[in-house]
Length: 459
Image (cartoon, rainbow, N blue to C red; front, side, top):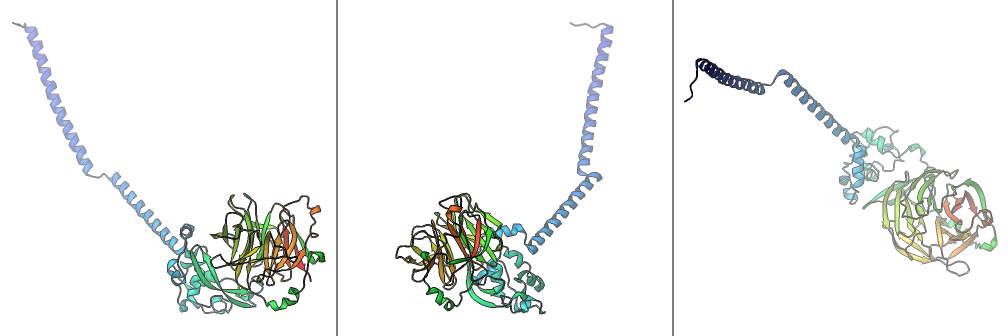
């Protein structure tokens, strides 16, 4: 029914011919695309040179980093880095002497390794405190802050000697050997302690108390007036609420109280100036402080908590709980003659603790010379076989027989720095007694005092 003329037919043929060309072009284009895709696929399977170079560079970098990492691991093992030290400190040593070397990863040197030829070496000097005993050497290592550092340096005798020798051997003049026990968070270690005259505190061992018989038998009361002699006056931190003084190894230590202000301090023994102090948590009210062999022991007021510090740097070694008559801590000292810790708590009692457990073994009631109870005994010190005690709100020093609890003397210190001259009243009382490098002199000060003294008790 549809009829085309000639022109229309030619035009239609031309149109159909163009359509055929378009179809053929599409087919050819598809073929070309498939060929290109094949070429791309072939390039994917074959790594080009540029990409190969990048791969090789990556492999080399991985190898380099691996080598560096391995080297660092070796360095850590050999030198004992601080990171390794921290991990040791976070996991306290446990056990006893028998397996100490295993616990600290320390293989004690053999006798042949320990003994180093040459008179200049501490191992061959009679002053060396461990006498070439590998077991004792290992015990010493275990008591150090970073035992793994020392253990890793035992590969050669030279390194071992250099790191273990306690100090110049030529300073030894007198040697006294004493059995003692060190405590560190669950670990108890027995070791021999060497007292070196002229280096250590001269009063770290019990004296011959017979030399003080005459002094013991001399009764002194407050009515006798001034029975002390001031040897020296020094400046003192007037903000320090002094709770305890103690002297050891040529250094004076102080415990200062009050909440959020408590700390433990190292003082210059000649000037009483603060050389270092370590603050405590604000919840603790620091009280008495005493040295015990190679440590400082501090008690707190109402928390029934005590702390043990490294005597050389004031780093806290451990802490402990304690109990007393009224469950408070006031004063503390070490009886070197009977190896007992003595504590006051504001009651009429002296509490005697086993230094190995810091638990009470007995207590003694104290009676003053007039027959009254000795209430509110505060800071205390052990001297000449007796306990010297301050009394809260009184400027006095009591001399107490630790066996009987009898007060043998009462020294009046009201004239040392009269209350009328202090500028304030109340808590700023005499409190703080310590032995000194001079066996006949004592350090004394008070709470919030701006001065400290060295004195001699008479006669």
